[in-house]
Length: 179
Image 1: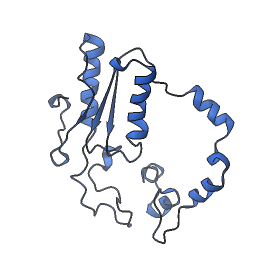
Image 2: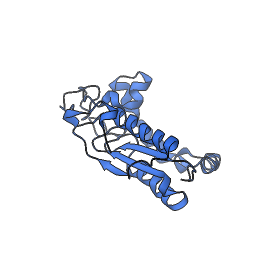
Image 3: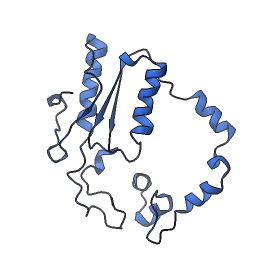
Image 4: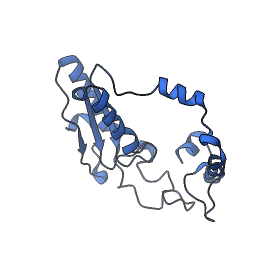
């Protein structure tokens, strides 16, 4: 759905690359191609490039990551938690903070619960999810303020944690938040 919005596609055009099956339970066309493509279409050149450009978890300055636990585009485990593991294994964990925002999604424009068809039945916004997502922007801004203080004033950011939120009563002022 995110790709559909970025490409300007409607729901019917988006169905071809949706990760969900259609009303007749047929997988999207892309799935058939992936199933028959050798190594899912990746070549040795792709793998070599990925290894050269891989994120290793090594860095020498403070770094703060902010991730929503409801991010449907970049899953928490596959992205934020695996990066934290890489930092722990290969980097300097004392320079990294991961703040997981409870009920946080990926794209704030969709956090109002109105723009997407969350049950993929062809009707946008009828699921009543407006108070199930937390806006990420204030949390990202607050994390940036912590990062600036850490880098410029040597005041370490608070420990990594999952941040409890109230989606129905979003705090929209970054300076009013404390982690």
